[in-house]
Image 1: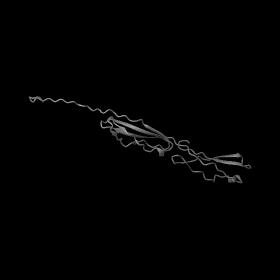
Image 2: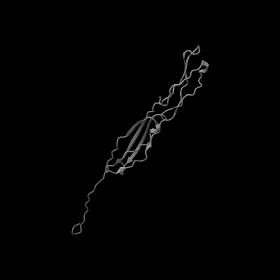
Image 3: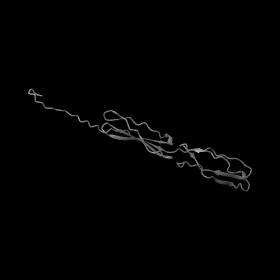
Image 4: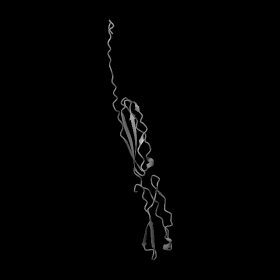
Length: 162
């Protein structure tokens, strides 16, 4: 404003253009059972002004029946609408299970070498029961003529092919 009362406006304008924020590298982990694929803690992410961003609730892929991947995805959005997703991927590789030591009994006659024993109950790393195959019977040399051995062999295979 001058002495005659004339006025003019002058302004200095800051245009704030919040650039997209940077996310840390995605997380990965290999685990040996499905129970280990728990929701991870997302990283601390800040915008370019140092403000901490809070992610939305994560989305999660379906849990496989046996092994495979489970992915958690966290979406971050700043006040300017810049977005980014951080993911954590669990790769499930089912650990091999163990079976007890072989067992056996001595009998007097081949007629007593029947399949009346109890098979061991085997569970995999996910806690699922592994069902054995049908018995393969082998005789050596030939217990039908005198004496020898009769073996009932079962193969246990889990959903991962172990």
